[in-house]
Image 1: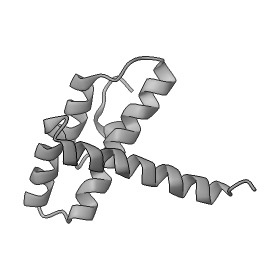
Image 2 (image 1 turned 60 degrees about the vertical axis):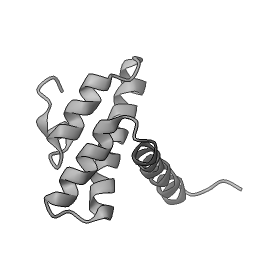
Image 3 (image 1 turned 90 degrees about the vertical axis):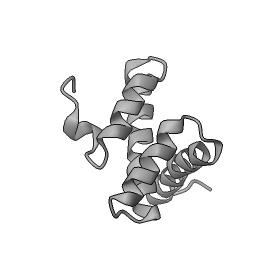
Amino acid sequence: MRSSGKESGRLAGKAILEVGDNQLRAGDPPETRETFNRLLNEGYSENEAKRLIANVVLSEVYDVLKEGRKSDPFKYTKRLNNLPAMPWETEEDK
């Protein structure tokens, strides 16, 4: 049985959140943990901080697939540093 579009979207969102959680646990890249701690210090809840980081993960995955390129650690770090602003709100090359 095929899952609905809503269910597929929920599963995809869960997977993206898991990528961020894995980065936090592993400390790789370290900028993910640094960003998480910064967001907590700025008053965001753990859940909000993880969701903001997930938006950066999703944006990077989207660009990798769209542009057919490898992940760009410099761009990823820049996007983390710009949070809470969303990548699509701050990038001049988009």
